[in-house]
Image 1 (cartoon, rainbow, N blue to C red):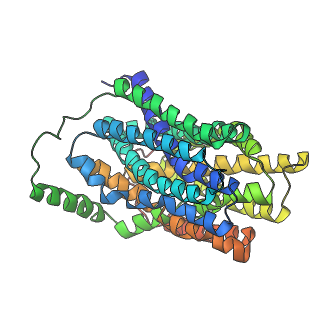
Image 2 (tube, helix red, strand yellow):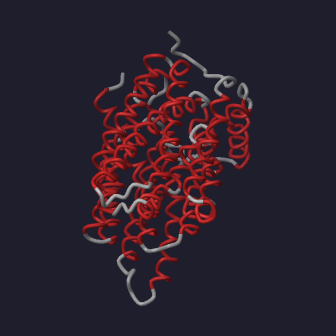
Length: 417
């Protein structure tokens, strides 16, 4: 019998520890290099740091075959802590006579951190599925896991970026590393053991090969597999294209400072984020995924149209009226984007075979951002050639295929009313 408080505690702590490294790689790197004066075309390439999350299914089966998800999680989070401390050290050296070389070193470190952080996602998602084995529990705790993840997002955007604004980037990244260290120690003593240790037994090469093959083959044998994968790849595509250049857009086009960005995320963004995640999960539980996903999807995609309007009006953050308009749209952006996240996560979980939780969820979660990474990587070039408005229009167009696919994909409902 599960203990609800302890379950809630480990669900919240693990998903915070999943969200923070992701944000250090995907968001803080963008703010850092924007602050360092890197041009838009190169800033767009920062989106390629998301590639390890798209490739993680290639090594995800190792986590099913060797050791335990809990053991993997602890080892990986130790590596993340060390690497972020190293990034902090080099960030503290920027400003010397030759900062360019240091920026190259930091970029290289972010690449390594991206692969480790993606593996952290695999271990945590699989641990969640190992601990919560039935669909009702997965749905019940989905709001909490999304909320904890989004709190980590807000923490990185607000607290850590504020530290960079008020002090410097050395202390910002050091604070991120120290936070990961605290969660590593918490997990060492908090996490329940759901699995038997497998690392000490001999695993034949044939068994490894068979497990790899079956984990992928069992996934593609599912009903309407091609449509399901296309839906996963396009559901958040428009929203992710918007986010791909959101930081330089706010800082360079709308004159939002680092401290203002931290305030927007820390107060406005946090309330909107939590509201979107919790309402989305509650809506799905109340009405079922099949009934809730349509209105959720429409609300999520209208968000892109609002950003097109923002890019045309170009209010400036140094005026009170401009900052108020930016804050209002930023709030809706965070609410709408996070409203759709539980829907996609629950859908991906229902595609998982219990025997291959790590591999199947890794495949689904990797595919869901594939298009965004590819297009987002060249978003800076698009901005330099066509401007932000046309980039956001492309994002809305990219959101249309998922709405069409909603008519055809299987929902695997277990909670029909």
